[in-house]
Length: 428
Image (cartoon, rainbow, N blue to C red; front, side, top):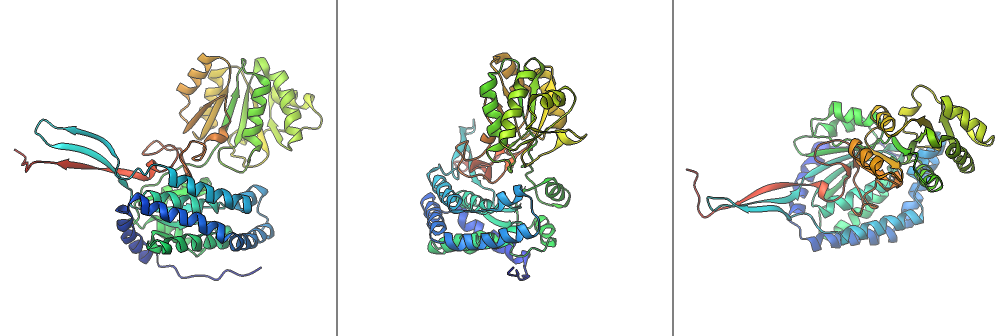
């Protein structure tokens, strides 16, 4: 394998450059930003062969290191995925620019006109793992909202990410935008992550995209506000009133459409009144799709009776707390909507959870009680996505309570300032 040379990174210098670039970006017109985004889409298509060449090297290294199939799927780019990245970039061009929009305006009794206006956050630090598409997603959303960004991707995607950053810088150069608007920490040295987390003189917000260990590190080490999320222990509850055939289709989609992502289904909860017929159907369908089922108690017995071809394993003590990111599905029988709600309280991560039902009262109760970043009624958890929600690309899916929840699109990358228009007013 071709070796990746160690690089010296001066984060202080990167931070200074990002802060300077952010001031220029903050006052750019929407047309200027859109021209840069269109250039990124064009460069992606023009340089697809070079990107795929570097991605193939990363994939070969990943296989040699024994990366899981889920991680390899997240790492892999192909022509279709590059075309999709270009298409998503063009979609962002078509979205309204939130910067400068007035959130409210009112005239005070003293004659002062007071308003709140959207502005960029400033400089973002984004730390992520084996998802090279994130490099483009973040860069496009940050440019559209006038934010500078310092990126730090996983070492397993270094070649691919460097190729994508070359695409971005070529597009920026075509539009006289400083390269420091989008910078990449091109060294796998993990000590640089901690340094980035403490670069509060220049960086305004940290967004981690990865597993629990990365989120824990960011929350413990950062001296900068951190947006947490992206860890999805996702559930669907099949209610007694559900259309079982259609519920099965939703469960299948949520589990297997792309099992390696954070909004893929991890546990299906089944009402005891429909457990026997539904689990028989589930066992057959999941066997055909190569999904291993983890269950205990009555669910385990029913699944083992239902289909000898299904791979059924007794659930371990922590299995209902797992984000599988693989073709594994937890199965549990419960006695009603309240038990489903309690199970999600106990085992969920407030990411993506849903109910499959024809009982509107149960749907309302579930939606009111579950405070996940997105709650679904008769729909797959796979829809918790910026593109699917019409936000264009997304920076992350936030599961925290402050500032932003769910897919973080353009508006979530802005804050606001008060604008006070007076007539030579002085405070009495």
